[in-house]
Length: 193
Image (tube, rainbow, N blue to C red; front, side, top):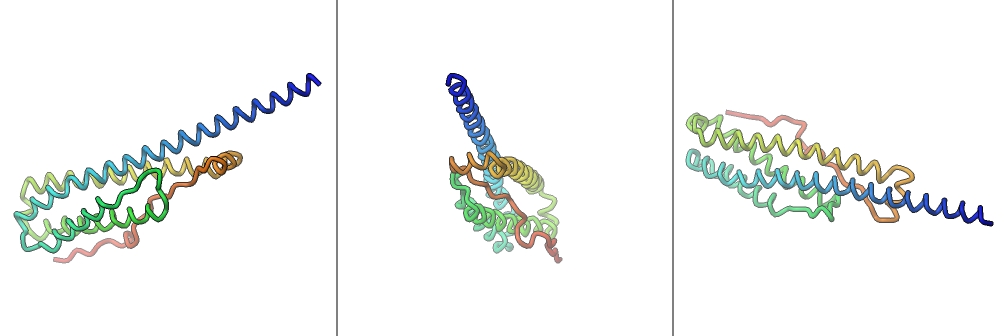
C-alpha cells in the first residue's frame, strides 16, 4: 500500500510540474509575441510622426499636387485610428490594421514619386533627409513585422503541438495571425512621367 501511494504522488508531481512548465512556456512565448507586436506598432508610430514633416516640406514645393498630399494625410489619419490591443489580436482586427497601413504605404509611394517629377524638390535637403528617414522607417517596419511573424510562428507551433495543445486548450491560448503581403504588392507600381 505504501508503494502505491508513492507511485500516485510521483505521478501527480510529474503532472503538476508538466502543467507548470508547459503553462509558463506558453506565457513566455505569448509575451514574446506581444513584445514583437509592440515593436511593430512602435515603428508604425514613428512613420506616422514623420509624415506631417514630410507633407509640410513637400507642400512648399508642390502645392499643386494637393490631391496626393491629401491622400497621404487621409491615409495617415485612418492608419493612426486603426489600432489593435495585443489582448485582442484577432484575424479580423489584424486584417483591418494591415489594410489601413497598406493604404498609407500606397499613398506614401505616390508622394515619393513626386520628387522624380520635380527636380527642385529632389534637390531640397530637408526633403531628402525626411525621405531617408521614411525609407529607414519602412525598413524598420519590415524588420519588426518579420520579427513578429517569427515570434508568432514559435508561439503558434507550441500552441498546436502535442501535448502542449492540451494545456493551450484548457487555458485559452489561441494562435496569432501573421503579417502577409498586401493584395497587389506582387505587382510593381507603374511610374509615368
